[in-house]
Image (cartoon, rainbow, N blue to C red; front, side, top):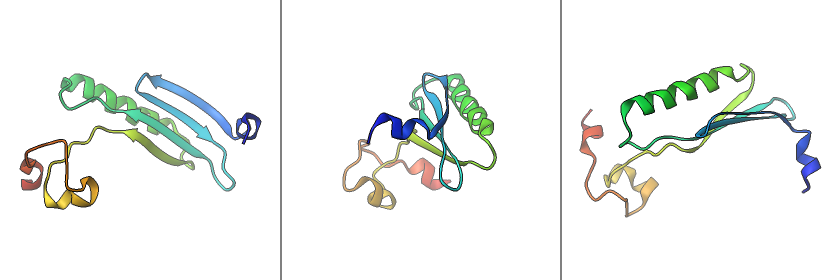
Length: 105
């Protein structure tokens, strides 16, 4: 496929921050708003994380109401080695301890 094939399908592109951007694509029956994100890691300060999610919420709200909105990319979720998460992580996880705090809630 060549560049000209896709150029007429992209109707808008906006980069809100270096970690959040949106591309709007024309579809056959409706349009798609694809929001690409890279969330801050858990160890970042709360202000940075709050700002990120406020920006993400604002970007989501700016999408036309009738568009299909899809958020893609890395949200830096942490999950432990609990049996519940085996279908997602398999036998191995980067975390060597169970994250029981979330399960106890």
